Image (cartoon, rainbow, N blue to C red; front, side, top):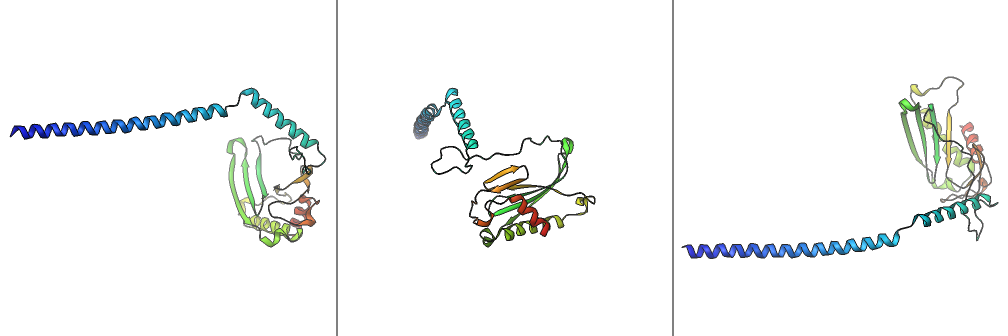
Length: 224
């Protein structure tokens, strides 16, 4: 009875050895594949590496293009222009973190715009409360009249303010402070004024070109 048992044991050992050999070959092939992949990545990294001197040259070239764009009389970049399209900003300081109070923002960036209210408490309390609402602009207003577009925006802003609770009511005589982001080419003449150079993003309200977008918003707010 021992011979069949010995044969069975030997067969089991051979099977285990064969399985181990197959597993070893698989791992070896996998290791070789990873080695080849690693070599490809190292070669790509070497080809893409940019010496510090080359990076400085790129940065200097970009700065020169921006200066040329700012010096150009055509901020929109005329046909054949190689300078970057640049517009002067009148934002000359950044928030310090000490700001306190209630602030509003209106962001018109395309077919949607957003109204935002935020209550700031300085560096200790930071943002106390914040709420925003997105609104889609109807297609017909993107090619209609300027008054219709800005009246729609002002109405949405008025509705947003009207939905506030008692804790947001300001003292009598105190006006709300509103920041306006207008994400289209605008030639600014101050921190709170700028004329539209041209529309993008599907807007085609020709009568607005050359007009002060802040003034148009203020007039619409007064109409509301």
